[in-house]
Length: 193
Image 1 (spheres, rainbow, N blue to C red):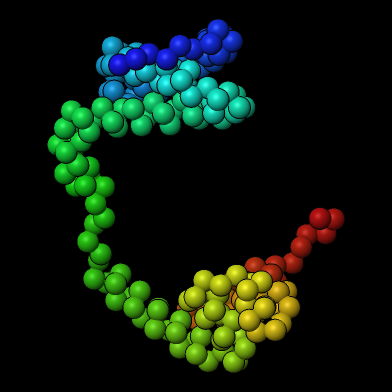
Image 2: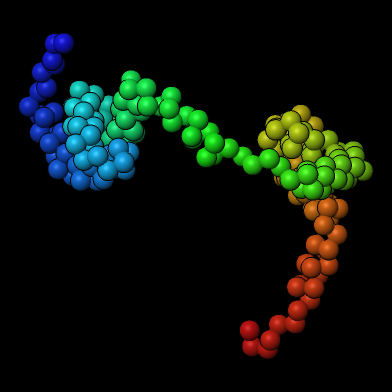
C-alpha cells in the first residue's frame, strides 16, 4: 500500500491536536477495548493517522468538533475491527438478550387499551375544527404552520386548538387532574410573599 505524504504544516497541526486530545481519546479507547491498553493505543494511533489523512475536514472544525470527530472515528475503527474479527457475531445474541424489551404486562396492556379507547372517544367528541387540528397534528404529524395553511387559520389558532385538545384529553383520561389543579391553585398565599 502506497503511503501518502503529509505536509509539515498538517503534521504540526495534527501533533498539536494529539497533544491536546491523546489522553482523553486513550481513556475512551480503553473503555471500548475493555481495558486492553495495547489495543487501545493502536486504535488511538490509527485514529490520529486518519485525522492526518483527512485534515482538510478535521482541521476546519473547532476544538469540540475535532474531539467529537476523533471519538466517532475511534469508535468506527473499533467496530470495523470487531466485524473483521467475527467478534461482533458472537456478541450480537448477548447484546440482544441484554437489551431486549421485557414482555408487556397483560394488565398494563389492558389499561393502555382502555386509555387509548377513551382518548379516541374524547377526540371524536371535540368540536369539528379542534378535532381536525388534533388529528392532523397528532395522527398525521403536521406542524402548526402546515395545519394553519391547510385549514386557512392562523398558526396561533392552531396552537390554541392543540392546547385545548390536550387539556381535554388530560381531563378525560385523568378526571382527578382538574381537581388536583384546582386544589393547588386555591391554596392561599402567605402575607408578604
